[in-house]
Length: 253
Image (tube, rainbow, N blue to C red; front, top):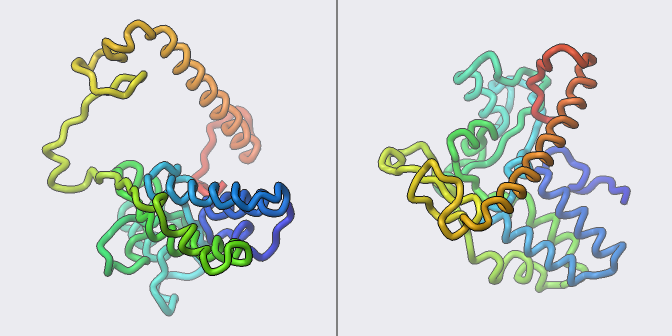
């Protein structure tokens, strides 16, 4: 489906918005199934609030065209580039680069440009994502523009309110005083229950199915290895060499 001028093709929106709008449009225009489109939108919002969306789907990228002093107002990507330069000048984005960032959770009165953070830094420190920001500032407006002609005035109450928005999950940050008193424990790879011994892979309940669980995990590993190999080959072709080490800092591929 060829789309122009909407959020599915804009680069300043996170991939989650494009995927959500594309799927809803396909269900509405091609499948002619408004109910399925509504349920898909509600399920996506629920997954977002419950932290079931991969962080790669929440990354926003904007081009760094000027220095921080040349902008009239504070910009999220500009402020992040300035902070990254202080942390590590070697890996900080330069003028002309697209700066990827996510919006992290903070106090209610914190400005959006102060909540932008590098996705890698967020993953390394388990910093919680501000899912409410993505719902209100990224998803709600394009979603309502599509569904208001179909659902009418009830579109907002159906899509943005209800049972699917009541459950929320927040990731606990590693940065903080309480993290010093927490202790990690291994879980069973079968049922995810806590293990008494850290050197075991499965609990006593799953012991009888150990071989089946092992084969399942091996299958997952093989699929990820195949995906990595395909992506690595693409990087080699992009660099123009199949034999040298890939030296690339681009995160917007």
